[in-house]
Image 1 (cartoon, rainbow, N blue to C red):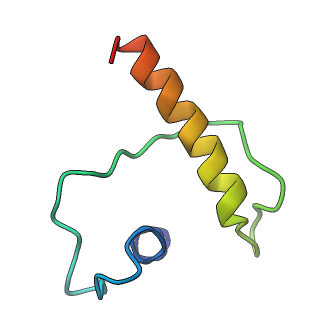
Image 2 (image 1 turned 135 degrees about the vertical axis):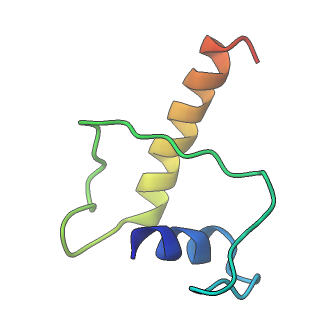
Image 3 (image 1 turned 90 degrees about the horizontal axis):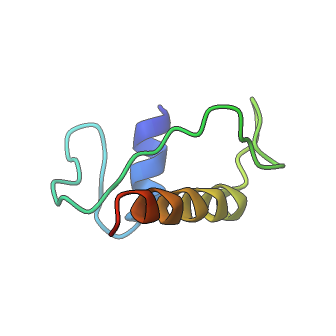
Length: 67
């Protein structure tokens, strides 16, 4: 499941699984539609490329919200 993989990638030392989630409010989910970094497909996930795109989109969102 993508959300479990994402949680374990972002918080590798928290022991997250199907019965234990991350309850702190420090995660922002952003859907960026057609922007897909190279190395991300049906069978592969390039975590650094995904993080770079996510960081870029988060900065754009912060700027748009005046944060």
